[in-house]
Length: 94
Image (tube, rainbow, N blue to C red; front, side, top):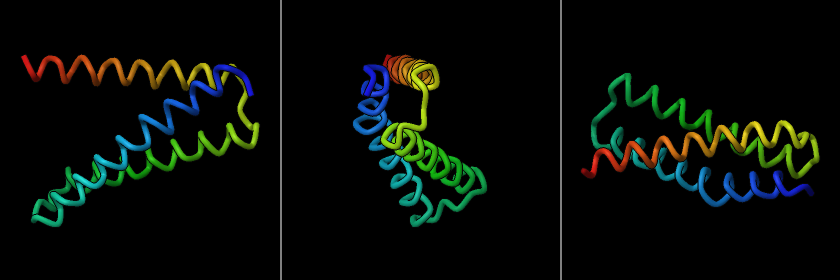
């Protein structure tokens, strides 16, 4: 397996999937506590769809159905997303 696929698999499995699952749990807790607004329900559905996409990335890598170029593109997008998220959290804490 190429280095970029290994790196993508690592970031998806150790960072993205656990964070998305945690966020989905938080959204479900909100809905259980009575926040069944359309926005919350939409966000939950979107995050569940995103989780499936992440799981499909893992499957594509393991079944060798993804090129190195595709892996690099997805990895770059995930890194940008993580940097944006990190910068956003930094602004909230200030």
